[in-house]
Length: 303
Image (cartoon, rainbow, N blue to C red; front, top):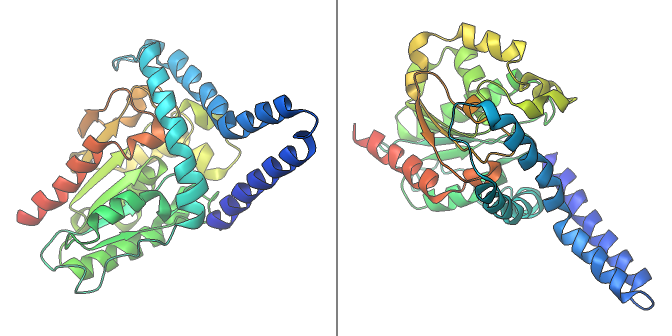
């Protein structure tokens, strides 16, 4: 469903740009150039709102605060990253790298990995990770969480099925890698399935464990669940045993333009790792985050 929606968005942008050129080029070439600039950079202007809001919201947060120059660099990085994800990988390449669950692709005894994306995303989000793993001998599966705008609890069966498939292929409980809302979906799965013994480790990347300031504006069920300190999040935390957070490594950034204030992406008792100067989507493709996360699966296989 999401791939079709984002395909429609991509084609609409191309059609709108083509019509703009057709109607303005002959008599108003300068207007044509300005319009095309808007089509190319309009999303970057929208991103500015998130960065400005995070700068304001972080003024009292205990995490190290990013300066204006760091936010500007993160804004540039996010403006370059977001179109590749939302206008190419997810709408047109969402199934480019299939799950690796067959014997020749997945070696038993090597820890498998399950990838869980965030809000308004699908499995194509993870293509750089999946390509990296394709010939590694690790079993892996990437889910597409639907309904896109449903409750986070609705994703539990999808995660359960993926964990079962990867466990069967590898012969070991997997490592879960989760971006943004995906980390909350993983926690909801752990609660519903009582699955602590069926997962080796959970890595979250920019997950709003305590909600996000941006969630207050969402009209969707999953967006409302991610509102800052929402009732759903408070209940989720109450339902979790104290030791569970020790299974988590949480990457977070002080330049996250979606999940803020900064410290909401941390879990008490988890291995919380600050990645300074990186925005929300770009954080999932940061070289340090990727290399350390993939190394965890290799180390886990040797235990």
